[in-house]
Amino acid sequence: MSALLLAGELTQRPVVTLGGEAVAQIKDTVFDGAVGEVAGFTLSGRGMFSGPKRRSLPWSGVHALGRDAVMIRDEEVFLGRGEVVARSESRDRDVLGARVLTDDGTDLGEVVDVVLEVRRTTAKAVGYEIASTAALGHQERRVYLSLPDTLAVSGESLVVPTVAAEFVSEDLPGFAETVQAFRDRLRKGTS
Image 1: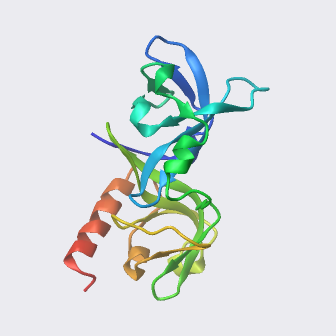
Image 2 (image 1 turned 120 degrees about the vertical axis):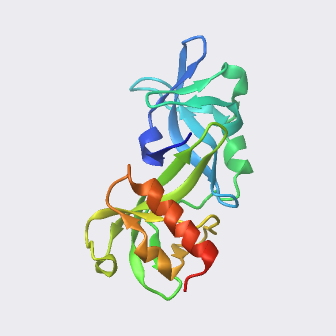
């Protein structure tokens, strides 16, 4: 079973041990751009005056990612602050604010968040929430744009197949079907 959520919703979500102790909160989500999956999280302390923690949480240390908390076995799963970021091939590349262009040069909009498909053992980027341009017929509205199975993230723009513009959703609950239809279309060819 899987669920869709926005990466931005994870910011400030508490990290709780199976013993019930709240030990940190999520600061940032770190992606491995090579595979489009969540590599882990940077952490901050709990409370208003807490700053960044010297530890990070690799995805392998996540017991469960729930609606209200990220569950871990215990604090032994934490790594040094930069280890998760250092393992990620996408370090120094923040997709938020990047332009999304089709491979024929059409500007579809600006990335405002990343849509994650969360399963028991992985959390994979399957789409972007974008502030759309007129090219999508939804100018200045936030919509969800499907991503192919693999996507290279580099530079200031993200390039998607032209056919991606046909697979846009205005609501997150129905977006899973849109992603599947898009990927099926790519597998069959864009004709």
